[in-house]
Image 1 (cartoon, helix red, strand yellow):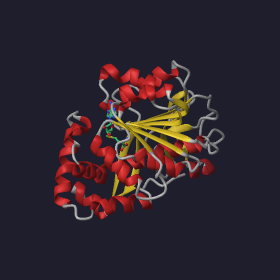
Image 2 (image 1 turned 60 degrees about the vertical axis):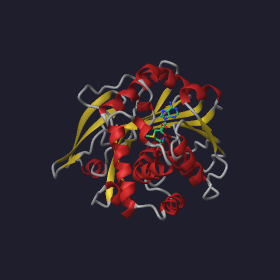
Image 3 (image 1 turned 90 degrees about the vertical axis):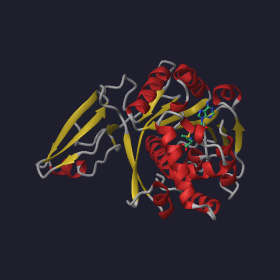
Length: 330
Ligand SMILES: C[S@@+](CC[C@H](N)C(=O)[O-])C[C@H]1O[C@@H](n2cnc3c(N)ncnc32)[C@H](O)[C@@H]1O
């Protein structure tokens, strides 16, 4: 399992890049970029070296935390998975590549692909700052065209990218990602209803092409959640002083909300049930919203059932609960 916080070498590389940077200017740039994202403009506002750095300082910790949590779900399901190659589509500053290199020391080939020149230059600078990613291969251009010529990889990641691909292209984009996947495909989106909508659309499409869900779902059936409910998770990460300043924030941590799916070419077993919200704990019982093999369930683990109650008290939003755990109903 890897930490949700940026690894020390990446933190140091970012800090070196930020030397001499006006924090006020960077905070303004990060604010404008974030507003552009919120109004549907995607990464278009990231145009210069300073924009790219401001974006990375403000957002890389959060997106890294979401990728790390998702890769941990993959590792939890298959601790022996040892991929050799990675394709990071819409890689931006290389966030998912850094997280994957932390999760899988077996990785030897890193192909990244992105249309944004400023983010690509930053990714290359960060990668060249140390030995870990010295050999990355960064393909410039529009993924909708470039994917056809990209090499297949054991792990393909599209992190916070699908929401930037227009409605008309999204399903073809999903097909292209899957076509390049030899082992596992990880897709992450912001933890909002629209992001979840993109995830379940891609999930259904690729299950139709033979994909199997590794996580978060314990089944390949249709998602049992009904609007206005949506499946998303939350990963806590620590904020550095510079990160707090850039975001105009006081708290020493933030909670990154994300939706994700991991799909595999091979059938997956066993698949654990998943905790879909923070459980309520009282002295009488633990009550948890669970997605299990049979679908959605609200389960109550009474205090009188001492061993099960003790285990259930430790459950957190997003946790996997393996079958055989006697807090779960049969
Ligand atoms: C929100 S950023 C996420 C970056 C990175 N994956 C992460 O998790 O930090 C979205 C990235 O997707 C890229 N992108 C969006 N549409 C793209 C396309 N059609 N082809 C290539 N890159 C694209 C943008 O340039 C941007 O770098």
